[in-house]
Length: 331
Image (cartoon, rainbow, N blue to C red):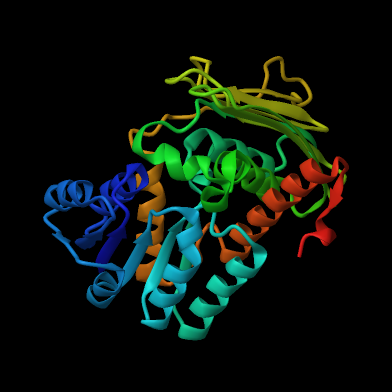
């Protein structure tokens, strides 16, 4: 399996490291930053190719680690050339573009994987397994948190341009939108509030988004590019009729649970977790490699990724309209 990496920034480096653990061959790298492309290519004994079309001609799988506004056109070109596509999240900035990507891959008989890596983090996976096994009963309320410092360095410019990245909601909060929907099913309504600071050198973006699910469950999702450089905090509380699962990146314990004890039991039901000695991006790429090799389904479907985009659009619509937005309004 021949892999082409498009983009040599932080995500390109993470994906390349993952592919190097699969037995696949990274044969080419393309990036607007020539020095970064050369460094990444040297690490994996690959070549720097002159442009995207040249890379597509050389590979079986195109791995897109580029600004979001480039995803649609690159995916369509790769699909029409008969290449499988791995695409960093978010898949697109509009429903129309996301559908075009899905349709192009379906028409060409190639597969599309959108890299929602949160599903591959061990804490989040363990909690999802417990919820799916019914260990907390029917989900009632979820609280999810993801707050960090604004993008820094050379990548700051395109992240700060909402026309290219979609901004903080699309880039950061989409992780928890996808995770919440994975656990609780389809969303019915979205309400969002945000606070922004545009001070030079200290721009920040913070939001609270409430999701109401068709099941009646609720999720309160906190997200922000608002912390000092170096700070990145995440966490969740998942509450059901029979218990609670919680985790915070500030905790020393990997995960805690407070589940309803079985009759006669004197202890809480534990949810032990062995912290994996593997980067979740590598776990994710290994999953993609295995699915492409065997034909088994991806853990994240293209439709899952499209619905995560829809939730981002609903949150932005709620912010602009100052009211809750029904998912049916976002088309």
